[in-house]
Image (cartoon, rainbow, N blue to C red):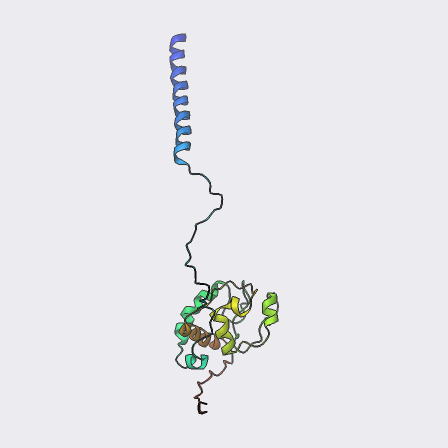
Length: 187
């Protein structure tokens, strides 16, 4: 093989490498997207009017009335979203949030070994049907500063169903309250 043939082969090889390099550079400039300054997606949220606070208003009906027609089965379905942060079965212990087994009738912030937020510790009291109804409506309004990020259940029927279901998660479920008729005459 003479030097002219070797030069042609090396020239073709060098030309091919230069062509591939140019294609690589061009594809990088064309097909790559700039890295966003803040990763993620922007989600448009409907802004409430300053005077309206529908989610934070108290329940329209007393919990006793709602519990009279509550469905434990539907409550179990709605409560599945709670299992992301809470265990519902006895003895499973806390996850991100405390164990909810036996929550109805239990003292607020009383599960041993769980580190509650200062807001929940300061809340005090017992998880009654009324207290759970208020809590499930909007936990952050009920105990400002709580670490619980759950937005709440605005649907009264769903709250009653979940409370009825949580009541069944106990060795000794609490008797459901009955709606009391207003026997006093109106003044």
